[in-house]
Amino acid sequence: MIDPVIFSFSIGGIEFALRWYGVLVMAGALAGTWLAAQEMKRRGENEEFLWDAIVILLPVGILGARLWYVANATLGGNPYYMQNPWEIINIPAGGLHFYGGMLFGAAALFWFARKYKLDLWLLLDSLAPAALVGQAVARPANFINQELYGQPTTLPWGIPIDASHRLAQYSDMILFPESTRFHPAFAYEMLWNVLVAGIIIWWLRRNKENDKPGAGFAAWLILAGIGRVWLEFFRPDQPRIPGTDTSITTIVAVVMALAGIIMLLVRFKKIKIPLAENWRERYTIAPPKEVRGEKKPKKRAKRRQRK
Image (cartoon, rainbow, N blue to C red; front, side):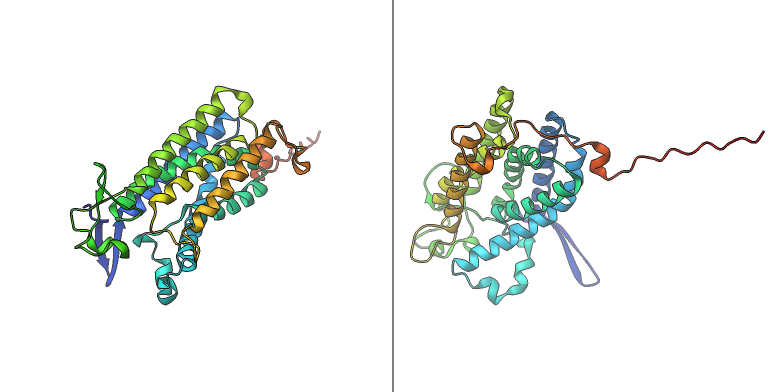
C-alpha cells in the first residue's frame, strides 16, 4: 500500500508532515475552481471573483466537512470524538463529509455573493459540475488512507485492506483473511461524479435554453442525490439511524434529489409555485466597479491660470 505521508520533518520537537490526503484535497479544490471559473466565464461573468472567493470557501468548506463527519459519526453511536475531542481537528488523519462542506460552503458563498453583488444562481450553476470533479480528484486519498470501502467482494477490482484499517465487522482475520478484497466505494463515487459532471455540462451547453438560472444546480441535486443513495449500499461504515438499516446520509441524499426534481419542474414551468413566479430567465452580470466596491475617480478641477 502507499504510505499516507509523502515526507515529514521535525522542528523544535514538533513534527510536520505532508500527506497525500491534504495534497489530493487541495488538487481537487483547484481543479474544481478552475472548471467553475470556465463556466462563469462562459456565462459572461468575470471568473476572477471565484478565485477570490475560494480563499474563503475552501477553509469554511473543510471546517464544515469535518464537523459534519464528526456529527454523523457521533449521532450514529460512535463515542470516539466525544471521548477524544482533540481528534475533531485531526483532519490529516482523514474524515471529511462532502455534505458538510457543501452546507458551510453554500453559506459562505451566499455571503460572498451578497457582499460583491454577484448572481448567486450563476455561482451555484457554475460550481455544480465543478464540485463533482473536485471531489473525484480528491477521492484517491481514500484509497491511500484505506477508507471508504464496501463489503467483501470477489470482483476483480476489489481492493485489499490492512487489518488495522478494517471495520469491526471485518476484523476477524479467520473469517476474512488477508486475501479478502473489498468494494472500492470511493472509486465508484469517483466514476459517478465524473460521469454526472459530464452529463450536466453537456446538457447545459447543447441547448442554451437549458442553461437558465438554477437549472444546473437542480440537475446536480438530482444526480448527486441519486448517486449517493446508490453508493450508500456500499458504505457499511456509514452511521445508521438507530433501530433502522438506513443511514443519515441516505435521508439527506433523498431530500436533495426530491428538491432538485421540484426545482427543475418549476424552472421549466411544468409546475407552479407562488414563491418562484418571478424566477429570472437570464443571469445577471455584476458591474465590475460596483462589484469590487471601487469608486469612480473624482475629476480634478482645473486650476485657473492667472493672467
